[in-house]
Image (cartoon, rainbow over all chains, first blue to last red; front, side):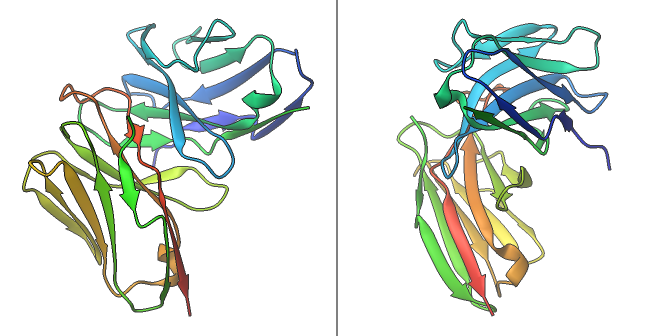
Length: 113
Length: 112
């Protein structure tokens, strides 16, 4: 069964540092998302990406965040200057098409110290 | 505004039934249900696309009441593997490719 692959599984970084989280979506999927989940809380939407551009972003997704799909395969989330409150589990998710199930990657646990 | 789930947490003995509710103050165009085990990614259970729709997979089923803006997930004869946190997720429109706004979650614990 095809999977969404995320790397790294765990990242520890110092406050103020840049991090890049990577996702390899399922090859024929069209819609890509980043969600995050602070420990013990609900899954929160960050950004959606379709046709090589951002289609929607949440209030959380401020100027410190960016996404890109540089080579048509990897889908990355960059946080330019991490803050303590960025510590969370970050999930990549993809959809094959409209009104279909979302496939989630296993997540990257980001710890900002 | 996120959907509200109830109960927040429930503990069952193996073999008992559970109902998890998801209610929204806004129109529901479709409802997704996911289960998340501790430290893992959410795993898709089912989508309900139309009001009145009911779906089932083995002993897990769901209903969607569009008029009441709510959905319910039914777990019958629960197994230990059903433990986890259940989330409903809803899109804001009926375009179908939008972000999901997830509910508050229901933590289900099954004990032997």
